[in-house]
Amino acid sequence: MLPLGIYKHYKGHEYRLIGIAKHSESLEEMAVYEDVSDSSKKWVRPLAMFNEEIEFNGKRIKRFTLIENN
Image 1 (tube, rainbow, N blue to C red):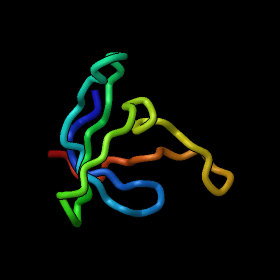
Image 2: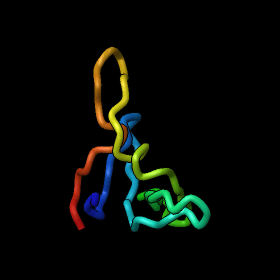
Image 3: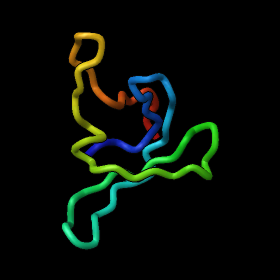
Image 4: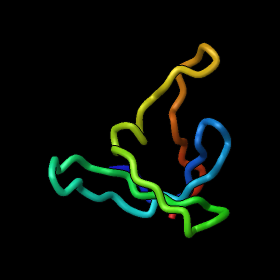
């Protein structure tokens, strides 16, 4: 399981991972996170996607990188 905390998106914005939920139909684990600068903006994406590596500028990098543990 990923630690809760603040993550930096590869494009530079920061988000707080606030929990892991399960999709009600598929039971897929979902990352629940909010914008650090505006906590009213909540987001959900598949946990596997939140934690995956992507190719950016010809390099393999994490989509989200933990920068502060809760």
